[in-house]
Amino acid sequence: QPVLTQSSSASASLGSSVKLTCTLSSGHSSYIIAWHQQQAGKAPRYLMKLEGSGSYNKGSGVPDRFSGSSSGADRYLTISNLQSDDEADYYCETWDSNTRVFGGGTKLTVL
Amino acid sequence: EVQLVQSGAEVKKPGESLKISCKGSGYIFTNYWIGWVRQMPGKGLEWMGIIYPGDSDTRYSPSFQGQVTISADKSISTAYLQWSSLKASDTAMYYCAKWDQWGQGTLVTVSS
Image 1 (spheres, each protein chain N blue to C red):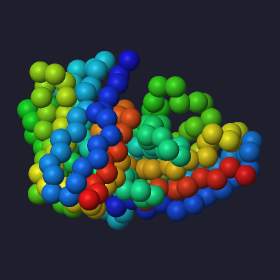
Image 2 (cartoon, rainbow over the protein chains, first blue to last red):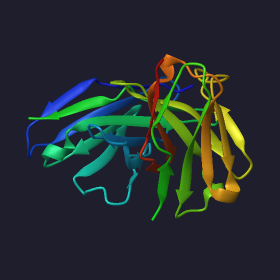
Image 3 (cartoon, one colour):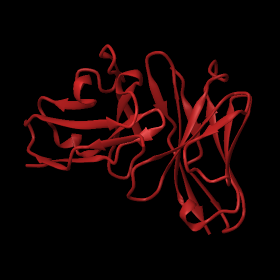
C-alpha cells in the first residue's frame, strides 16, 4: 500500500509563491496523485490530478495560480501570487486497486 | 453541475445505530467509485472505504473493516455509510467523495 509524506506546515508571504511537496513511498514513485484544499471550517475541494510525468488536470474553477509538477517520487503543488484565502490545509491523495490514502496534510499560512 | 449532497448533522447516544447518506447528481452515478472519508476534530482526512454503485463492489480501509458498512442504491443515486453500534470515538465529520468532487460533510456527534 502506498504511503504519502507531507510537511506539516509551510508559510509564505502575500503575493509570493510557495511549493508544497508530497512524497510517495518506495516502490510507488510512478503513482498518480490528487491535490485537495481544505479551508478552515469547509469541506475539501479537489484541485488537480498530477501524474509522474508532471502532467496535471485541474478541477473546474481552480485558478491559474495553482500548478503541479513532479520529480521522481515527489509531487509538487505550486501556488503563485498567494492570496489570503489560499491559507488552508492541503492534502495529497493516491490510490491503487484496493485502497485510497491521504497524506497527513500541510497547513499553509499566508503571512 | 456535479453535486454530492449529504444528509444533515446527527446527535446520537453510544450504542445507537445510524445511517447517513450522500446523493449524487449531474453525472452518471453508476460509473464512478464513491467513497467515505472521516475527519476527526482537528485531524486530517482518512479514507474509510469506497463503493462502485454499478455493481456494489465495496472496498474497506483495514482500519474501518467491520466497523462500518458502505452501501449504495443506484435507483436513487445515493450512497450510504452506516454504523450498527456507535461509540463516542465515532464523533467526527464525515465526507463522501467522488474522485473530483466532495460532499459538504455530515457532522456526527456521539455523546451520552
